[in-house]
Structure formats: structure tokens, C-alpha cells
Image (cartoon, rainbow, N blue to C red; front, top):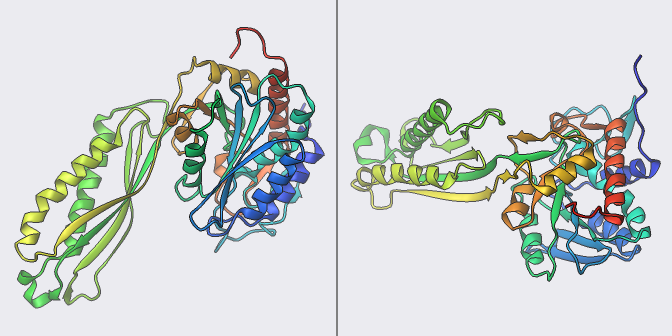
Length: 396
């Protein structure tokens, strides 16, 4: 017999409806959503901290309910979503659409479902005599490089009492994720020397130099695939190197003077990507003498525009064990995508990833989260409320 799907509290769905209605695509401001969340939490007596981007068009929110003089637990999520441009949606992506137990809308899985559940639970946390604080962390620009949370973490470094644990609610189907890969994004610009292709002995072909480096990146990936290091918990079980964009040249009969390409390294959390970058820079140094023999302006410039730490929590860490008990599951998993959890851990705040929905639904048309997943998240937060009110002696 098939059991009926669980349904979450109506206030969770109502909050998700409100959150999805904010078009917080990364190119837009998130301030309307942050203002709503700040008002919701401040009415409950929360202490609010905001940090801003340079143009003051986006903000992070960090709010605290309960006693701030002792370590507490952070419920963390990003507010931005990826674009819907060019995607064939069956319904308005910024209006929550409930069809057959699935809630459709941009960000429902990644990751406004978790934020909706956390904010809907805020009155419950505020109404109870918490033995430890519950913090809410809402960030901007996660989708374009985990940018905003870095300023939030810099601000938290000044707290007299820092959180003891962060739960990042990315969609894991409420499975506890204790490890994920890191990511380094790099743009390489090759400066050559333009001339007529009939006189190519006088030029420096930037496209060909770029292609040589890209070929070496491919060889690096082959080496990593064949010799590791390996961790069987990840898919694929090795560090990956990938070139995604390349641009250069103006016409076939012109030796191209410029070419740029972008590549990324997604490293196992215990595999330092800086060693790989040192190797890549060494290749460039090998190519420069021949280039500069023809043109003094020739060069190869690497811009490491983003680097996000991997997550590597011990399965026996007390924080991991606590979240397992909250999720009702004793297992843990690793994922190959990158989240803000690695940055929390890198800043000294232990972190795990656990949230409603499936990452397979993220970033695509007709993104959805199921009512069943939100109900499981509701149960998770209910157990957290019990723990924060009556922590067991000797437990985390």
C-alpha cells in the first residue's frame, strides 16, 4: 500500500509563496526580500545585523533569537536565484504553483524552500525559552561565486560569542552532507601581437598560445583521472579541471592579438588546488620567452576571480552527529558541487549541508520542491526546537 505524501504546515507554504515572488535573480537587488525577513524577525525580538555590497544594492542578514551570550546554531541560506531567461516554464516562475503535491517556482528547491521553513519556524523559536540562540543567515550572490557570505563571515569574526554550528539548507533531500568539493574559477588572458596572416612570423598568435594551455589543462585532467588523488565518496572521485569559455581572433587572415578563456578546478576538499595553479602558471612562464622575442607586450595573465573552500567535516564530529539525529538519519553523504558551508568551516564555524528538495531540480525550468520534502524539513526544525530548548547533558 502506498502511503499518502506528508504535507507541511500551511505557514511554510505561505512563506515560500512570498519568497518566490521576489525576483532575486543574481543580477537584481535582494533588498526587498531582506527587508521582509528583517521585519519578520525583528518583530519577534531578533537582533539584526546587516552587511552590504559596495553599491548598497544587496545585503546579507544575520539575525539572532535567544541568548546571544552562548554559542548557538545557524540556519543559513542564500537569497539569490539563477536566471529564467530562455527557459520554457509551464507557469510563472515567480509565482508559486502547486500541482500534484509539487510546488513550482524559481528557487523553490535552491533554496527558498529551506528559508521558508526556517522563517516560518521563527515564531516557534521566539516563543520558547531557548537554552542557546538560533541564528538566521541570509546571503546574497551565492550563485555567482559565494560572494556575499564572505562579508557576513568577516562581520561574524567580531562577535564575542561565535556560533557552534551552521546548517546550510541547500537541497539534499534532507540527507546530511558532511563534505563537498571546493572550486576555483580562473580567467586567463593571452596578449599576443596582431599582424597579417601572410606575415605570421612577425606576430604572436594569442589563440594558439591559449589553445596550448587549454590542451595542457586537458592533459592535467587526464592525469588526475588516472592517478588521483581519489576519494570514492565523490562522483567523480577525483579533482576535475574544465575549460568552459574561449574567445579570440577577428578574422582568418589576421594573426590574433588577444584571446581569453575561462576554466575551473573543482577539487577534493583535501586536495589543495593552489598546487595545480602553480603548475599552470609554470607552463605560462615556459611559453613567455618565445612570445616576447617577437613582442614586448606579449603576456599571459591569470585572474583567479573566485575561490571557494571545500567542506570536510569528520563523520564523528558532534555537530554532524547532532544534525543526523535531527534528520532522523545516521548516514552522511558527499557532493561534488560547492556551497557556502565550506566557507563557514574555513572561518572556524563547523558546518553541514541539509535541506529540502533535490539538486537535480535546481537551475532548470519548472524547478520544484515537493510538499513531502518541506514536511520533512518541518520535522527537522521541530527536533531542532526541542534540542535548543532542552539540550541533553553531554550532547553537542
